[in-house]
Image 1 (cartoon, rainbow, N blue to C red):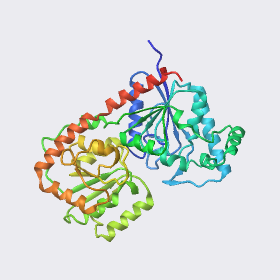
Image 2: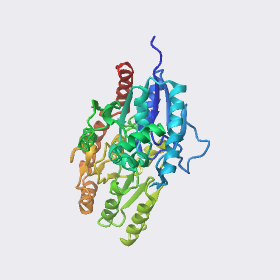
Image 3: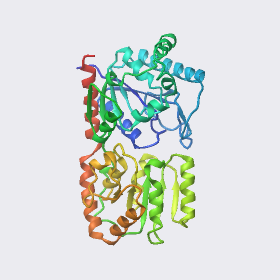
Image 4: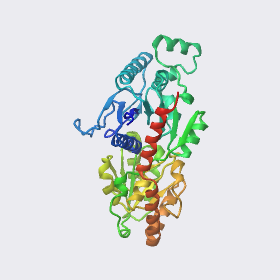
Length: 405
């Protein structure tokens, strides 16, 4: 029988100290890997959500040792010596785990804000690598990696600094490993900014089987004007559009905004709700543990997904569909690869608050339409279950371990 695969998995945040759905995807893949008899070691940053108890249950073999260039939902400002210290600390931790764990494969998950030189360090070590690209870190990550950015235009000085510090000053992304993108939109975005990977594919994530296995309701519940937004509370998610649309709906309509994010932006949203006279209709709530999400969705009549940016994939609509809640969304980016207007969702243009309000009114007034969208949503979610993603992700790891460098 072949020896178990040893996988070192690296990313910026890992549950229960996570920020969104992409870390849940990572965790699911690692759980599947272990269930199949393989070994996974998680190397992540020292970020911890303050509301998570210090003694909260952890997955096995999780190491929260890396520093990064992000803190308290803001990018850090560090001088050259502080950058050098951060990079040396991260390189030492990475090298220690390479030596102790001796991975067959390194998998990279969301790594925006991290020391991207670790990617090049892995290439120097000759360990096969897989990049599961679940967010557009290839665009913003190099900009906020203060060490590599410092050497981006210095020519021969970068090579001298690399030899002197033994720290990479550039990353050869094209030859760093095989790239596994969460959507066609995400791959196209990476290619547009200059990535030319030698090997790449598209593997779309799926919804947690616990959502899919929940008991189906016999029919949609009576409409109560309860709208839900859940996810990161940041500008690109278009949460202000949802608030503005509420002012165009009956006074009994409510909007729950559940999630963590950019605190200044959240304060702007609170001021917007107050200015529009919606103070009693909009609530802001902290992110819920993943196990509590099914109940949260079922308390809503519809889930709004008003993203303004090209969403890499989008688990929220799929989770809502799995639990029988109609979705009103913009269909931007990867989410447009499974959201179909008037079939499994209602779509509106990004930033169009009247358009969103009109979609809510149509849904509220037409129980038959709600029923058809819910039924098609169930079918869509069933086609995008996490088990298929996890099996394919593991197959990629096994193939990478066998692939000659």
